[in-house]
Image (tube, rainbow, N blue to C red; front, top):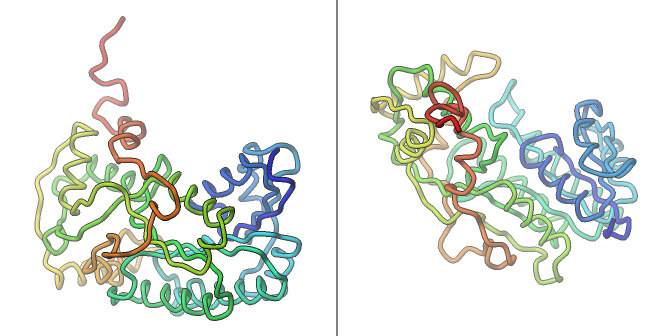
Length: 318
C-alpha cells in the first residue's frame, strides 16, 4: 500500500458512487472505514483491498455520537449519502441536510483534514424538494467546515448505474416510451470512475482545491430523447415515443409514487424541469486535473446484454 496508512471514512459507501470511491481509496493504499447502518451490506467491498484495509463500520446516521465513532481517527471524510425519493415526509431534509450538517460538525471537532460532499448540479435553479434539501446541505456544510469540497456531478453512469440500466430494461418491456415534457431536459452524463477521481483530487490535492464547488459533467450534453436514441443504438431495440405533458406526468407520478420503490415521483417530475448540466463559468474536472470519459467508451460494455438474443446476438462463430 502507498497511502501511508492514512484513514478515510466514507458515508454511503455501499451506494453506486460510494463504492467506487471506496475502491479508489483502497487502490491508493488508504485504510477505509465504510460507515453504514448495516455493516454486512459492505462486506462485498472487502476484496477490493488487502486483509483489514476496508472496514465496514456500524453507524446510525441520525445519532451524532455514532457519527463521531465513524469519523474517529480519520484523516479524510467523504459523504455520498443521498436518496432519490422519500419513504416518509421529511426524509429528504434528514438525509440531505441534517445528516451532512452533523457530519461536518463532527469533522470540525475531530480536526479532519479534508471533507468531500457529493451534491447535484444547477441546484440553485431546481425547484424540487430533492434539490432544495441538497442546497441546504451544502450551505450547512460550508458554514461549519468552510474548507469542504463540494462535487456536483450530473447523471452518473457506469456498469451498476440506476439510470441507463433502468431505461434499457424499460425498452425491453414497454411498447412505447414516455417523453416527459417533450424529452427536452438536458443532461451531461459523467462516468462514475471520473467522479471517484475527482474525489481523490479533492482529498489529496493542494490547499487550492479546498472550500470550492465543482460541477462535474462529461464531454457530451444530451436531451432525454437523445438518451433513448443512444440506448436504441446500443441495445438494437427501438420503440416509438409518446409525449407526456408536465401536468399529466405529475398525475401519473402521483400514483407511481404510492409503490414501495416508485419508478417515478411528482418531485422527480419537478426536477426534470431543470437541466442537469454544468453551469457557465463553473469550476469542474479541468480544475481538478481529471479528463472525463465519453459515454461511447463505457456504455457499450454493459448495455450489450440488453440486446435481443443476449450480448452475443449477431456474433459470428469462429
